[in-house]
Length: 202
Image 1 (spheres, rainbow, N blue to C red):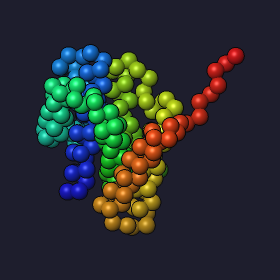
Image 2: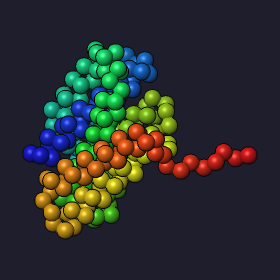
Image 3: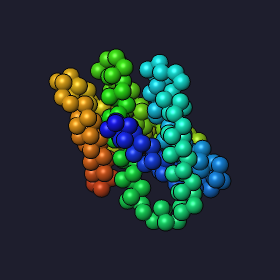
Image 4: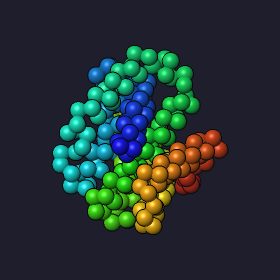
């Protein structure tokens, strides 16, 4: 139940951030909903495909699609108000990243994946939807830019894997790891931490 609740929280967060990005790109209402759905569901679909879960969980249960579509429509209708909440949008995106990365790792471990594979699948679950969103909007995916994003997701996945290895309770470990991802992401934004970038050629 806790894992499901966290997953829906992440869906709302990612659908909102994706829909807002689509509004800024001047897409129509259909485009906003599609980008919102893609951002929210993309990582989970990639995770299930990698784990051999067919059809993917989010495509078998209509509430996933409904929650994301409604969130995208709300953002489309009230985007001026949402856009003013810049910190809130960044926090929502960080929350989605943390929830999806840690929940994805837990699901992969429960499906029998090795620790190494589960960490990579968890990270991919967190960053996959955002990467597809950026490609749809003809932008360089955020995970390939200098911001601390994928590293935060991977750190959360590793924490879940460590907790699983020492047999700590699954629910609290997932929550703590997700909070760690959100904290790292928000501190990186606040302190302007960036991954190293190669110097431009002379």
